[in-house]
Length: 171
DNA sequence: CCACGGTGGTAGA
DNA sequence: TCTACCACCGTGG
Image (cartoon, rainbow, N blue to C red; front, side, top):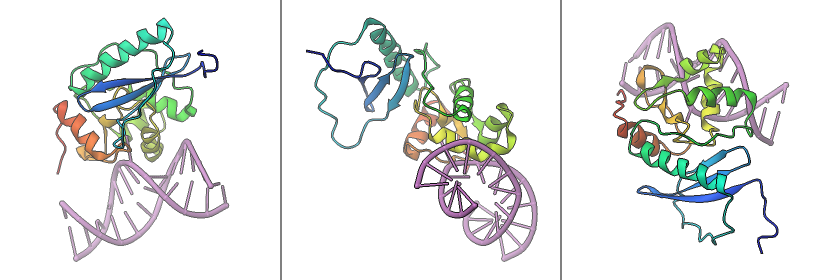
């Protein structure tokens, strides 16, 4: 009996060479992507089968993630649900989606892009709050003069992702 | 209101 | 290069 279920969100695993990511979907689209947990992978009982449209979105997510991890150019993405973020954060995330593979921006450039040049520091915070890392490429936002900057998911990931895209960091 | 960041720019070692 | 300091803004307590 699939009686009680928070119908508004579905959580599905994505197996990759880097581990098992977790994708969460709301009615509006992909709302969250989690890096593989270093701790034991959740046993996850196979829940009820998701509705067809969710399965479709998930296929897009899987393909896009696989390509992204390989440093290849973007593939079609499922609709992204940014509704959980503040307006400021959504503006930032929106800009991030426009940064193609192999390209980079500085926190200051992103701040200018949303017409709030002095908020460059807050942009860092918004990047850190990005609910859909990798696909919403917050790793392509570097500090000034091509320096690495930080990364909530762990700098190791940022380095790896950038390296796969052939991006060089100064120092 | 206060403190804290995934910053940036300047000044001096 | 690296450190010290300060200006600045959204977020969360």
